[in-house]
Length: 429
Ligand SMILES: *[C@@H]1O[C@H](CO)[C@@H](O)[C@H](O)[C@H]1NC(C)=O
Ligand SMILES: *[C@@H]1O[C@H](CO)[C@@H](O)[C@H](O)[C@H]1NC(C)=O
Ligand SMILES: *[C@@H]1O[C@H](CO)[C@@H](O)[C@H](O)[C@H]1NC(C)=O
Image 1: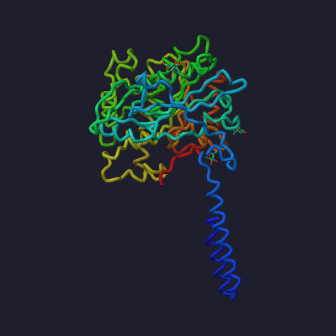
Image 2 (image 1 turned 60 degrees about the vertical axis):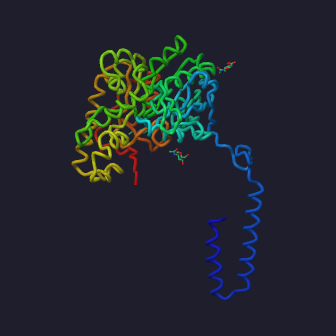
Image 3 (image 1 turned 90 degrees about the vertical axis):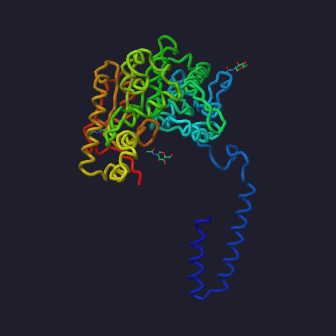
């Protein structure tokens, strides 16, 4: 209606030119009346509670947020002390006793100041979380978009602790408020509640997560399996969670220093596998390359060889490129010059090196495509559609399903950029 107004004015101007002044006055008066009438009726019909509006069909892919009951007494709280939460859509039919869990990502905070700012965001407080989440990709309930898991119980677990669900301490912030680093307790309390919601009777369970949530999957996978019923088929998947301990382009260990700070501030060390922390310092055990050595549960790694988060924060953090030579390239891989592509190829090679031991494990699955992306499983474009990225003509959904159900061995490694025409590359412009 509002978008139609310029067209009406154009029409009126045209009529005026042709001389029908009288008629145009009537039309403009009438259309003003209609606009007022429609505004009034839409105002009168304005619903106070959105889901009750009968005129807008409910989107079945939107799933309500559940805040964790009794979280405060367990000290399982977000950065600001608020309740953590999750979104659950129940399975049905053959999927009624199967569960797929997805841990949300969103980076980390490593200083009192940055964690204090995070308290005012959905990644640090449930007061700011959206009340509904869109379930797409591996969380989709559509059999054509999510062929193997669409009728399972599907859960998105919200991330609000800033330490990949693995800190356990508390500090005083400068603003006088407390900062809660209770990721480990949030993890335990949410799994506890889901166990009582049916997860405790599951026949198949699949723990997944993306980015910082993918890292959490590496950290909690074996513990998750230990909590599942005996005989259940339990597996894990980390999507874009294989963060490398690489030097940046200026030669600095930016990522290593950052993980050092996160682990120290949030006291993550004691929740990392003993097997690793007795061998090396805790912050090294926050890197998947070390974590993966300790994991006994069947594990799948989905990661692009040119993970844009890693390129932008590990390989070329802002401080390493003060003259912004990399700006265009970081925004769009097609704009990288040949030297930059050479550096990116080196990064992919480092990733494949870091994965080489894992690759030879019997239960291991992997899908390392050559796309400029980050997080491809809970995303409807990249998970499974006619235009999704493929390796050997298989989408990520097909590769993950083939591996989970043992239909074939899946160790899919793409040829280097720019060989794969099916890639979906992120464009920040
Ligand atoms: C929450 O706490 C109350 C009282 O302590 C208890 O009765 C109830 O079972 C608890 N609920 C959960 C989900 O733990
Ligand atoms: C993905 O979801 C968005 C938003 O719901 C929609 O516009 C788009 O068409 C979907 N794409 C595919 C490939 O399903
Ligand atoms: C690729 O897979 C699709 C089904 O997903 C199939 O229709 C097509 O024939 C396959 N293409 C090749 C080249 O194998």
